[in-house]
Image (cartoon, rainbow, N blue to C red; front, side, top):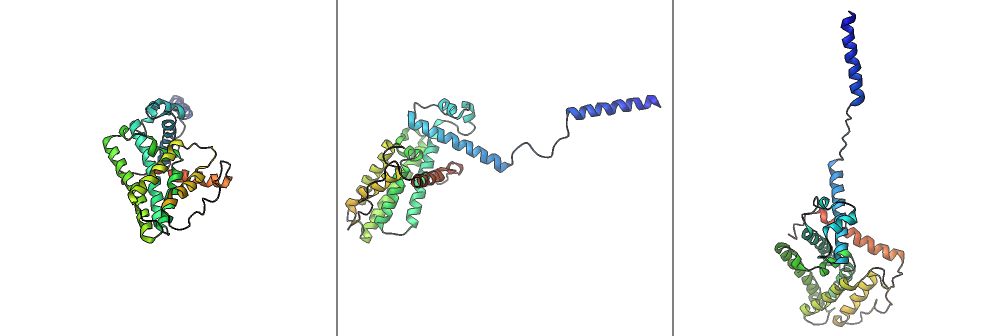
Length: 271
């Protein structure tokens, strides 16, 4: 009998040893839920875009490399290919985010009330303020020739939609009497051209805030075509760089909130 129990005892001892080496599996998965994993991926993708657009603006698109982007994010260059196929795709994505923000400005302006001049000035302010942000600057600082042919056509089509919005508000102003008779096409070119240039010279932390520049430009650029007395805000001195914390917070919150999550959506209307 003792010879029969000894092997059994030995097997039990081995079983306990194995249990110590391989603890019972937990029912809780070490992987995050699908939604959490997708959110984490999207956040990393957004971080790549933010770092890339900053470097493109600082160094120029051709001088900035994917190695530079990876270094700024403390990751390896191959890790970037988990999110983008190449630098030109990142460039187009940065532009796409900027354009979606413009689309939102136009949609909100069109949905609002007011004369053609009111809407023109509202869009001018929003567009000018966007030109002081990184994604806004990407609309005017990068060369379309660096994009693929398909993406280049997409950009050109979208640019025409922006131009059409300015023309339509000017034409509406002429029709309702808030804007003097003029050529909507030339007037739109003059206004949009001046606003686009903000993206080249504006630097944060300067004498004027982005909002102050936007409000001043809205008056200066529309005064010549406006009917009647319109100089309400222009008579006030523009706000300087030491604008209240609330003003700065409102500006950054609005622009950041508009940009956050833009690259997460499939851009069917752009492609």
